Length: 308
Image (cartoon, rainbow, N blue to C red; front, side, top):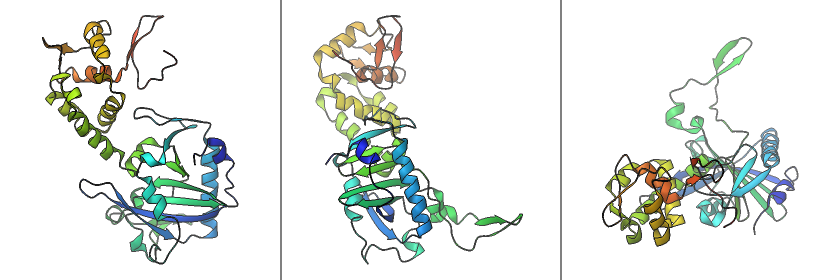
């Protein structure tokens, strides 16, 4: 079932049952990430803080736009993506109920957690706020600190280990819909960079893409493991303009008019070099646009076609 923004805003946060889950993550070679959540008991005081944080997150969203590889949101907006398009189902399935097997009965069970989940249940409606942990949850990093508190004008040693819980969440899972509030952390938690790398490998395996170039070596080096360039490569594959003979012919004929630094060989194939890869990516994304009013040429981060 698809959850709308109105559904989210009307969710009964105060009357909902709240549980907190610390989640570890591992990524086996060549396979999707594996999430291991542990239910953690919380005090009434913390529960109220978490309810307040979730309520504030719901209320600050004023608009929702569809998630895109190059789309960004702002402080008052969220990106929407179907849960089935991500690995979040594993987190959902493993945080259905508290059992003896998934309960955190000691600090060793929650240290090094990669993210945590604030789960709210109201009737048949279930909402999960997910947030990537900070360095205070990592044993290797926290062992290099001396935990202290400040009281009565002096510092003292904090006897119990402390971890930070943010008053913001990175994304919200509600039924079949994810509302993304922090895109970078959403992609980090659900291993979207890994998905983009696999997408780029798939792109390089497509004859239709490879045949557009005389050689792809320079483009492969240009993209590398850079997160932004991998996103753009995925977007190129999803848009598929390189498969359209009309698009490619227009690129050959008009690239100079759009101030694109791209060279072609005698057979009309793109010659990729370190100095031209940036413009090649912009062109295949269809992100070099010209104003019909000022006649200025622009690079755009993403485009939404108004009408054809």
